Image 1 (tube, protein in one colour):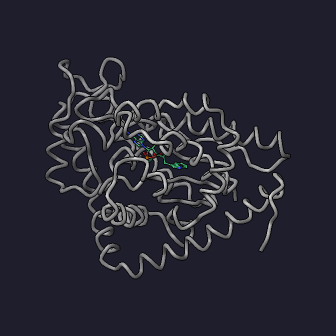
Image 2 (image 1 turned 60 degrees about the vertical axis):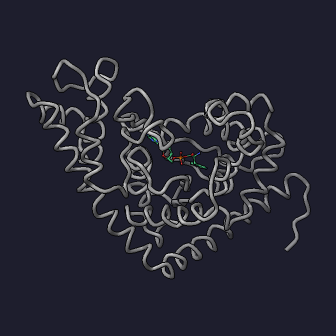
Length: 332
Ligand code: TYM
């Protein structure tokens, strides 16, 4: 089976609807056909402000949400990034192949460094995309299911793989992103031209997997729409309604056209009510299962230990090959 790799940062108490619809649903669907590796990328999460206690908790909660949503830790490899030191070592090596200007062109870095300010913009934040490339290349992944915001980082990963291969000989699989258009970017409910994100100015436009369903329903009912009152899909003219339609279609496993047809002639309130129901129908069981998993730490830790062991073994194989290629001694 071809290898698939993806990860999420444990940087919030809960995953949000963008993470779920944009990435996690594809992870779940793809784990049958792929040799799938899913990582909780805590090395990445320390490039933003964090508290150690909270980070520890969020790391476990993120892993629990993967499993609760449907990642099978027997079928797929599920682990925590900091358990596999090879990420950092390959990241270092790839950093020596990355141009300073090349890294400086990453739009996510530019956005984040502007938001954080000069004193909180670290070298780690700058080299973050190189570590992400290492994550992917370490496992010789062919497919990387992500949202559109990660596309530029995947391009960098491809460039680094090709650069390494042409300089040192065929070593890395050159990966490609898997970014289905309809769900590549889920928008903020209050500002439907901006990405749904945990770092938005307010939480009013954010739907979180683990939130109280009453809060979620209220946020959906208050989602920004438009004045023309017609339910149709048009991202430019009707970003708010189109976002609701895309979310509804994804969560109910249908095409956007079919959803538009179903709601033809209905009001926005009807669409919102139906959406709130399908969101709770999806997130309710995930919430429950997540809480069960978090209540039995021993079992969760066992699963993560098993994942780490598997991931480490594979990562070591790639790193040995890289060492050989670049003239580092390989010692056992
Ligand atoms: P992160 O943790 O910000 O987000 C996790 C995943 O969710 C997707 N996503 C969205 N998709 C659609 N609409 C949205 N509003 C939305 N918000 C987030 C992201 O695209 C991502 O797929 N750099 C990555 C983590 C990472 C990674 C990797 C991913 C580190 N190493 C290797 C893949 C492979 C990140 O910050 O994702």
